[in-house]
Image (cartoon, rainbow, N blue to C red; front, side, top):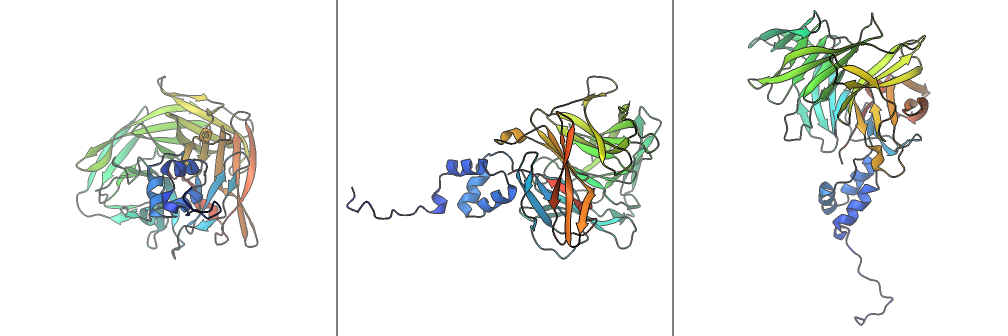
Length: 408
């Protein structure tokens, strides 16, 4: 029609001319975080277009030590991971991952001077590589010391709240964030150490240290409705669950604790011949969940898993066992846990909980692997899936394992 033969080749469209809505449709059917990153890396136009699209969040990412990760590429009971690879090279192999929020990781480095303490703590953005240095977990202070003591309501215990403590040495076991460090809202960092809860937000030169004999060494913490909730199961009374909440306030540019209450003291349902092996708390659809794993002995195979919702309508608060997640999934690790809307992906099955633990690892020669424990909430059955680990991760390599949840 324009004078050219019909067989003549048509001009090829440039990559950056692909319509934004078409690229959005492509992103919606790519669940793997690594594959989405490759799409954004094609050109500036695709990167800008991807930033304004609103596809479902990518599937979670497993982060190993030595800056390696593996992305989930398929979500169902027969889950699949991409081949582990590094997100960048770094010479320091002593870094431990102790928390995550969106695409941010929380890392620590062990101290050479203080035994069982960390010398550094930092936030690292996996995508942009931006790094935010936090105050040292092991430090001395000579000025502006401040201390107050608060009772733990409903108990005979108390908590010492200290700013610019003269000396502290902490080894962070888990770190949680109230918001993304890149967001407009104030990001509060909460870290759990032995008998200690440490708090920080931008502008503070040291940690606010909260010490109490009522804080158990195996406690788990989570932000929920502006408070910090802490779940504990006593070593001496292994079936007694205690949950504390810490009310926060800002005083002179510092985040502090203003009120502490033990809101739950309840006997967990007994499982014959078993003890509480592990427990976690995680937010799900506006509710706070407690996940309890029972085994015959500590770190042996799990015999039963219970999932309980914290009921705030009673006083004191109580626990209600649930047997479905409304199509969602939970991803649980010692360092980070979160719910995930599996129903947003066609063919993905929900109502599963995926556990990773450093105690389910295997080593044969130079080949390392670990098990992901998959729990079906509806029929209370479990299966184990073996996942290969990077070759340069040696035991106990999975002590660093945590889930990362990129938002795009």
